[in-house]
Amino acid sequence: MSRRREQALVEVMLRHQVQIDPDDLGAVLDLAAVGIVNGAWRNSPVEDWHSQGRLRDGDMLRINAQTCWRVREIVRRWRGDLGLGPQSLREACDGLDSDATDWLAERIWRWLVNPARRLPTGPTLAELAGSDLNDYRDHADEALGGFAAIAEERGMLYAFWRAAAHGGLACRHWWGTPEWPALVDRFMYVLDTPDDPHWSSGRGWQVTVETAPHQITGRAGLRRLLMSRPWALDSDTAQWVVGAGIGFLRSHVPQLPDDVHEALPQ
Image 1: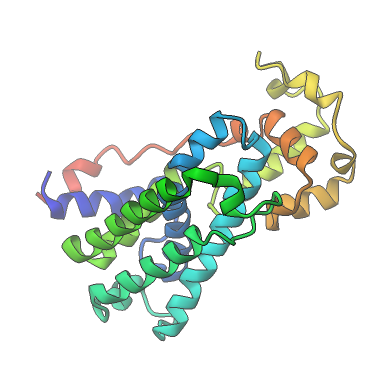
Image 2: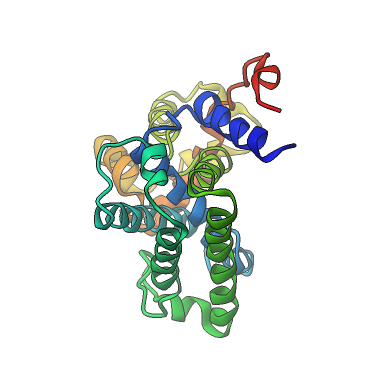
């Protein structure tokens, strides 16, 4: 596939599958932050720590969400420092060179690998990582270096589009994605609908419903936290939310238009 055709396909995926405007500077940058976090944090030695029992499923929910929020704030400050206002993403990228992307990648890397970074679950990164900290630093360096390299080789527009498409598709059940508000609403509905098909899907969710922690009983407060600050959930509640299958309530990815491939440039 030619580079021009590939870029056009990513643009179509953002519009029809992720369901954001590819030219919306704020929406693309916010979602690109999620994609960057997935590559530089989630799909890293962190997954080994998870499988080794250092992190529970609920811990992953809280840490991933807080990391997305923090990286999104770094991206937003970077945008402000560069004076990028309400213009389109294309206009913004046309006025910048790859040094700007290098600058952003370095900012994110420094925050991610900071040994003193306090995780919402309590320990610092250094305390969680232990002797694996350098392995994680190397992974984050490679992931963010790859993002910067794509921007230099293929252009900043493509780099942000690609990161946003990754965030919007691979992580569509995460906080900070367009799918998350609807997913939370669906979750709140099934909590009060014991005969919903979700509970009879064969995955054993019924067991956890009967043992819901106290924070679950305050539905309005739970919804507010899930929508705005999932990292502020207490440990038991976060574990219960994941165990109750919130991630399985996401909708199916929309299909691309039938004629999309014919419409793409060669």
